[in-house]
Length: 249
Length: 249
DNA sequence: CCAAAAGTGTTGAAGTTACACCCATGC
DNA sequence: GCATGGGTGTAACTTCAACACTTTTGG
View 1 (cartoon, chains in turn red, green, purple, cyan):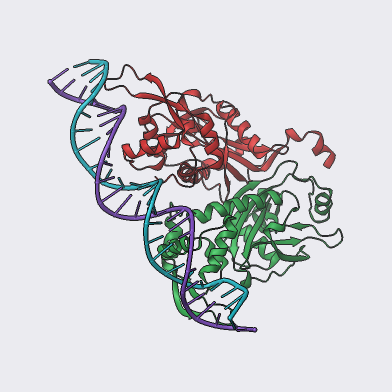
View 2 (cartoon, rainbow over the protein chains, first blue to last red):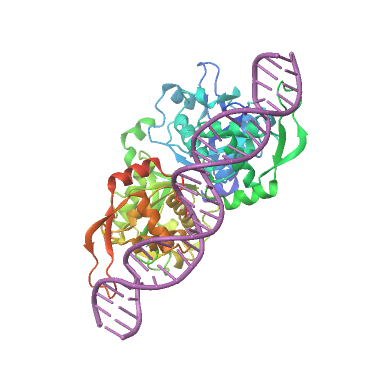
C-alpha cells in the first residue's frame, strides 16, 4: 500500500484536511472579502474559497492552488491564520447536501487551515471555475452568514488583520501603485474600524519613511488635487521583516 | 458506513490530523519546555507531546487529552499556534521506524496543529505514560533537535510567546503565587531574550496594577530580603481580555 | 462663488531611556 | 565586615492626542 501512495501522491485528495482563504480587498471606502457561491440551485450560499488538500502538497501550496482553481487569483502571498474545525462543523443542512454532491467521503471529519491575504482589488478580477458558480467581492460588514464555520474564520481573519496592521506596514498591498495619503488613511480606518486623526495619521506614516511623494498630483477631481505617493519598497521590506514594536493607533 | 461512524466516533483515530503541545515552564532562571522521550531502544529522541486526534473531538480537547495521556498534565489552558506539516515531515529514519511501531497507517500524510501554554513548573511534575517513556523539563536554549518538525514548531512557539508578552500580561502563569519583582524581571528577560533595565521594568509593571505587594518578605536569603507580590486577578483578567496596545519592552 | 477634500503646526501631557548609589541580610 | 541582590529618583528627550483654518480645484 505504501508503494501505491508513493506512485501517485499528487492525485490523492486527503479527505480530512482542507484549506480556506480569506482574501481582503479595498475599494477606497471599505474592506471587501472575496467569496464564492457554490451552486445556483439552492439559492445563494456564500462561502470562502476552499477545498481539500492533496496528500503530497504543502499546506501553503494547497491554499494557493485552491484559491486559483476557484477564483482565478494566482500567486498571492497567503499567511496562515490557524486551524479550525469542530466535529460539528456541518450544522446546516445545505452544507451537508452540498458535500454529498461533491465529496467522495462527505461525512469525513474535516479540519481546515485558514489563510488570509490582502490584494489590490483592481489587479484581481475574480474568475469563478471548478465548483464555484460565481466569485465576488462583498463588503465585509455586509456579511451575516457563510457556509460551514466560514463566518467564524472571517472574524478571526479580521482580528488578525487588526493586530497585524499595528505591528507591520501591511496595508499597502491593498492600494494601487500611486495613491494618496487620504486613501491610506481611509484604509487604516476601515481596518481598525475607528476614526483616526488626519494630521496625526499623516505625521506617523511619514515618519516611518515607507512612502515617498511623487512629483505628480491627482487631476480631474473637483477639489484641491492631492499629492500622489508610492512605497519605499526597501524601507517597506525592512520593516516588514523587523516589524515595529509600536505603531500605536 | 455513515451509520457506523456515528456509532463509535470517539474510538476512531484520524490518521491525518495530530496535535502537538509546547509547554513552557520557568525555573527562576531560564525557560524550559516539556518534552517526552518516546522509546528507550534507539537512544534519546526528544519530541513534543503529541498524537493523532479522534474523529469526534474538538482540536482543543484533543490537545488537552494528548497532553494528559503523555505527561499527566491536566486542564491546562492551551492556545493554538497554527498548523504545520510538510508532506516531507518524516525525514529522519528514526521518526519513520517509530511511526511504524505505533501507528495503524504510518505512511499517512499528517498535518499537526500546535498549541502552547505556560505553567508553573512546581505545580506540574510530569508523569510519563502511554508511549512516552519519560517526560522532562529541558531548557529551551539547550534544545538543538527534536523529532519530526517539532523543532520548527518550538521556534514558532517561542516567537509567539515573545509577541504575546508584549500585548498581554501573560507571563504570570509561569510564577508561583508569591513572587518577587526580580523573578518577574528575570522571566521577562528570559522570554524576550534581552536585558531590561531594572528600574524601568519595575515602574512599568507597577503602573499596570496587576501586582500588589504582600505584607511579607523573603527570608533566609543572604542579602536584603525582597518584598513579595501577588497578582491582582481582577485587573489581570481585565487586561487579558482587552489587551494593551503598548507595553513597549 | 460654492462645495469638497487637501494640507498644515502647536501645545500640554504622558511616556521613555539612561543612569548610580545606599540598604538589609546571612555568613 | 563583606558579598549579594534589593530597592529607589531624576533629567533630557520623544511621543501622543487634541484641535481649526487656509488652499486649490471643478463645476
